Image (cartoon, rainbow, N blue to C red; front, side, top):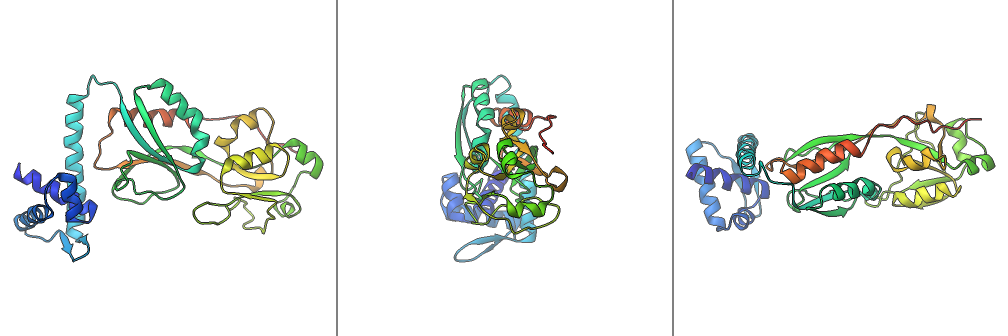
Length: 300
């Protein structure tokens, strides 16, 4: 048991990069954490952590040992939960971080809440790169690749960026046949709130200096302006399925657009999938990016 306690102290110190923070998490003093790690290093005959007055860092041996310790604790937690929660219904608070575009996931999130009323969703919408572990999130949903060895991940689904406009706008301004023709159109631009950069339109022809008839930092206003016939917008397919189905928006330049993005859910690798997190992951995987076969293109 003393060995297990030393492993716990090491994992907490390594993840927090601080003996003091690790001590707070475990309810002991920072010196107790330091002594436990020192005993572990002495028993193993190798240094696991570099200490300084301001912080601690992992040695190469420590990084490998941390990965193995996480697997050990994950298996222990899995075994405990398998026994203790076999009959338990998913319940409790689930704290999830989503991108600002996550507002467009609300129909799926609302359906989840109806299906699992005993789970309390605590949702944080931001495009900021949150620290899942340090900020206490159970999970995050993000687009793209996430390189963090402390996290486990599961693919939720893929999406495409499409160039869309209202039929009334195209009837008034004409249908662009080549990407270069966009220069003479009203382009509705999305600017990332965190970086201040415009979102690149996924044109095979490469970057084109597109005009900006309007600039917004969230997607919902772009959808509304496109619906109102104010211009052409670049939008993710999952956000405008209803508009495409009803013909409110149609796609253009399909042959000149190339894009596939991925949405993933991530959670701390030291944390086994609890019943509430498991049903959330399964539900979002099944519902969020269901296959769609409709045709939304317009041509002259």
